[in-house]
Length: 337
Ligand SMILES: Nc1ncnc2c1ncn2[C@@H]1O[C@H](COP(=O)(O)OP(=O)(O)OP(=O)(O)O)[C@@H](O)[C@H]1O
Image 1 (cartoon, rainbow, N blue to C red):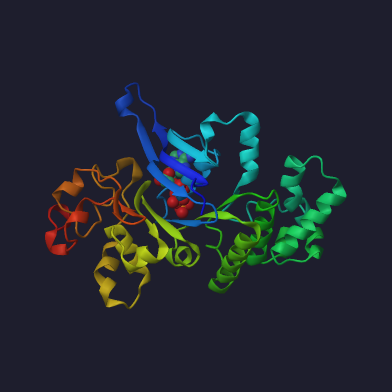
Image 2 (tube, helix red, strand yellow):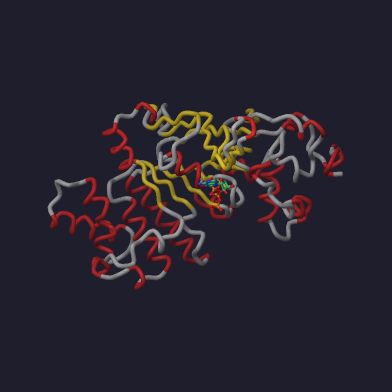
């Protein structure tokens, strides 16, 4: 791995203003992404996981500047994105690509597969002849396991898995370095999910890609990620290598998420119960730790004091005030009792 990470994110914020007010302190914001920091090395897959509404898509879109950040910095290839010139910004859009959640709605049903896959080439490779573009589209379709005959057909003629392959072909058309895959397999059957994940792994090797893999499903993220970042209400709860996160999760929220997918495992029974609670309204997030209102081991301080990310092992960070104390349910007080 090279010394400089491909992507460095420092205290990134994206706050949506919901209600303006004459008095600044009365304005209402949704803090969709709140002080998020992490790095991604070249060739790595960072999984980003959390329940619906925790800010995964907003984070992905803000990284690519599809949304303007409210604060913080993003460095790509060692250079701060806010310093990019217009030309560098254009080039960023080639090297960092976003694969959207729903392949069907991100494809124009009236366009042929040729037109859909060649769209980025038309926009960014104006020097290519139509023959060269045609060849490149055929090559891309083959790379994702489709034949060149697909070119003349329309999206509705393909299955969900095949449509996802088409979207991936379009995503890699410009030889990006970083692919942000947003819920790329969530709508697919489990067996098709596995095929698409295998394809992504294969492409990663062949094309030296780096991935940010966003999903609400910890099982999917576990399979593909080198490291995993757990988000809750727009904040980072924990980041660790995938195997470490599953073997020794530090944050009570991570434990609960793992518990919720470990059906039948009595060790996780208690944690599974607590995730039955509702995620708080992000406009009215808890004052202290974001997870404090659902946390089975929260103490008084957790409802008041915001924990910061701290190192809890090599390459392992978590934001929990209780990390120096045993996380047992008999330490809890306050509203969870
Ligand atoms: N344009 C917007 N204006 C106001 N609030 C927004 C906007 N976009 C997102 N949000 C809010 O920001 C929070 C994070 O949303 P986001 O879609 O990023 O979460 P997510 O984890 O990707 O969820 P999902 O998996 O359901 O897509 C949510 O509370 C959402 O309602």
